[in-house]
Length: 104
Image (cartoon, rainbow, N blue to C red):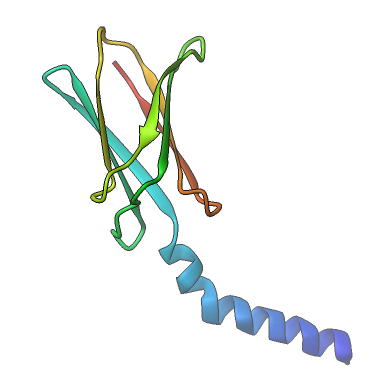
């Protein structure tokens, strides 16, 4: 009886708070314009990921290209010398992490 009650309480908590968990998912999108890659980091509710850590690696070989932090609008931009595929990793230092594969 106690196990059943605990199970039901856990299920209830899951359904009550599942929206809050989903609302904090981290997303990242990147695009290139005029030789500059622009990275946009945001949460599922479209809140900007401010001061989040950004790491950019070559997709082939894994060499780190650049690192930095997003600005107050969740943006990070950098120049590229040549067209290569990149792996962009965003980390908000609170347990949320997102990756984006930017194809050349």
